Length: 79
Image 1 (cartoon, one colour):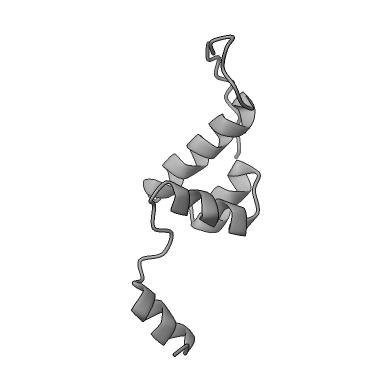
Image 2 (cartoon, rainbow, N blue to C red):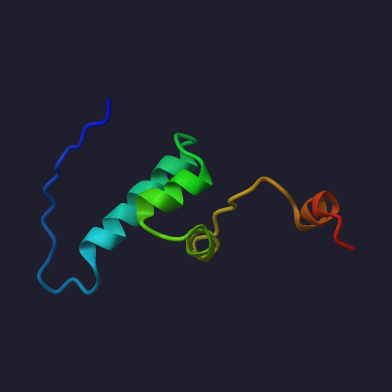
Protein backbone atom coordinates (compact mmCIF):
# COMPACT_ATOMS: atom_id res chain seq x y z
CA UNK A 1 0.00 0.00 0.00
CA UNK A 2 1.79 3.08 -1.26
CA UNK A 3 0.64 6.55 -0.38
CA UNK A 4 1.82 9.99 -1.23
CA UNK A 5 2.08 12.93 1.09
CA UNK A 6 2.24 16.49 -0.16
CA UNK A 7 4.50 18.79 1.82
CA UNK A 8 4.49 22.55 1.42
CA UNK A 9 7.81 24.31 1.88
CA UNK A 10 8.40 28.04 1.63
CA UNK A 11 11.43 28.75 -0.54
CA UNK A 12 12.96 32.22 -0.80
CA UNK A 13 12.31 33.82 -4.18
CA UNK A 14 16.05 34.28 -4.71
CA UNK A 15 16.70 30.50 -4.45
CA UNK A 16 18.76 29.31 -7.39
CA UNK A 17 18.13 25.77 -8.54
CA UNK A 18 15.46 23.20 -9.17
CA UNK A 19 13.65 22.94 -5.83
CA UNK A 20 11.79 19.73 -6.68
CA UNK A 21 14.98 18.01 -7.84
CA UNK A 22 16.92 19.18 -4.78
CA UNK A 23 14.20 18.00 -2.38
CA UNK A 24 13.92 14.60 -4.08
CA UNK A 25 17.69 14.17 -3.83
CA UNK A 26 17.80 15.23 -0.17
CA UNK A 27 14.96 12.83 0.64
CA UNK A 28 16.66 9.95 -1.17
CA UNK A 29 20.02 10.61 0.52
CA UNK A 30 18.35 10.77 3.93
CA UNK A 31 16.50 7.47 3.41
CA UNK A 32 19.72 5.84 2.22
CA UNK A 33 21.75 7.11 5.19
CA UNK A 34 19.12 5.83 7.63
CA UNK A 35 19.22 2.42 5.97
CA UNK A 36 15.58 2.58 4.89
CA UNK A 37 16.37 2.02 1.21
CA UNK A 38 19.22 0.58 -0.84
CA UNK A 39 21.48 2.79 -2.88
CA UNK A 40 19.71 1.59 -6.02
CA UNK A 41 16.26 2.50 -4.64
CA UNK A 42 17.55 5.85 -3.41
CA UNK A 43 18.83 6.66 -6.90
CA UNK A 44 15.40 5.78 -8.29
CA UNK A 45 13.65 8.00 -5.74
CA UNK A 46 16.01 10.84 -6.60
CA UNK A 47 15.17 10.41 -10.29
CA UNK A 48 18.81 9.76 -11.12
CA UNK A 49 20.84 7.00 -12.67
CA UNK A 50 22.72 4.86 -10.17
CA UNK A 51 26.01 6.25 -11.47
CA UNK A 52 24.89 9.88 -11.03
CA UNK A 53 23.58 9.14 -7.54
CA UNK A 54 26.88 7.52 -6.57
CA UNK A 55 28.72 10.59 -7.86
CA UNK A 56 26.43 12.80 -5.78
CA UNK A 57 27.07 10.70 -2.67
CA UNK A 58 30.82 10.98 -3.25
CA UNK A 59 30.52 14.79 -3.58
CA UNK A 60 28.84 14.78 -0.17
CA UNK A 61 31.49 12.54 1.37
CA UNK A 62 29.05 9.67 1.81
CA UNK A 63 30.30 6.14 1.29
CA UNK A 64 27.81 4.12 -0.76
CA UNK A 65 29.34 0.73 -0.03
CA UNK A 66 31.19 -0.31 3.13
CA UNK A 67 34.39 -1.34 1.34
CA UNK A 68 37.84 0.17 1.38
CA UNK A 69 39.51 0.60 -2.01
CA UNK A 70 41.69 -2.42 -1.27
CA UNK A 71 38.72 -4.61 -0.25
CA UNK A 72 36.80 -3.60 -3.34
CA UNK A 73 39.75 -4.39 -5.61
CA UNK A 74 40.14 -7.77 -3.92
CA UNK A 75 36.40 -8.50 -4.17
CA UNK A 76 36.40 -7.61 -7.88
CA UNK A 77 39.66 -9.45 -8.54
CA UNK A 78 41.45 -6.29 -9.65
CA UNK A 79 45.16 -5.90 -8.96
